[in-house]
Length: 379
Image (tube, rainbow, N blue to C red; front, side, top):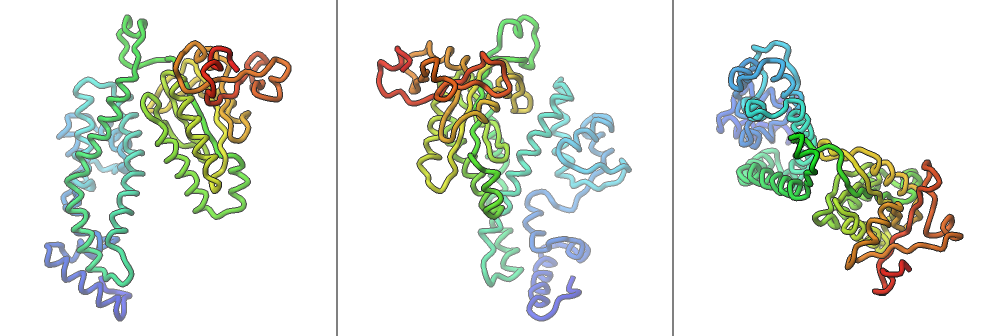
């Protein structure tokens, strides 16, 4: 525990070890810990030194070993080939048991495991951010290992009881929104199929102009900050029924059951970027069509078209497909107007041919409505 340490570092570690022994940790636990400073705080979130085997999890859940292994992989746990070897924290085993309970309730195993993987991936990112946030509150210049350990234990002790309710309520918020926006069509009701198939959805992408070139000129930390800011701006404009889907490097993806609120959100997003001289300009593309939702993501022709429209958009503009223009033009009282250029000007001004698509696939620039009459006349 003290090997290789000298002077003040050795004294700090000895002080920490004495404190940990007083809290009931064994010499073996302290010596085997990669970070003794976090031992006390880890115990508060389930690392109590109690371990279970894969067979224990199978016995508790009533699932067979193969299904337990699939569930372990889905939540991000390694697979121990010896099913009788107690290598999993009891708290981790309980998480797998809870997940497997849904299969006993009749949920489709493949769909359930897909949901578990999606949830685990999202929560791993959130956990890393929460860990860094917690450590930032206790780490300061001159702090000893004991002070950091005590501070970490205090913070985690106060926060740990709030994490499960917070995450649970946030998940229910998203589930309520998803159910609210879910339109079950007649064929789905007639067939009794619970998993939604293809359905009409408006899709939008926004990406930062010249991001690749910018990456060669600035440090990676600044690029990451720009991507994070774009994601934050996109989430801010994604008011229901608009939903933020994901970030893809220098781009964000949003969807909505109807194009009008999505167009309004994307115009606001482009405007926010234009108003900040330190932020790259955005180009935005919007399409509508039938797509399939899987694990929160979307797949289908409108996704591909929205991506291609985005690539064709000029910096600072919002470009939409002809289908969006036709569908949205019939609505009244929305906050955007789609301006069509005379046919002779379409190729080089507001109305452009879509790259990689047949000639009839045209796109239209989208702007804020300035005059009430402009909506009626398409000017």
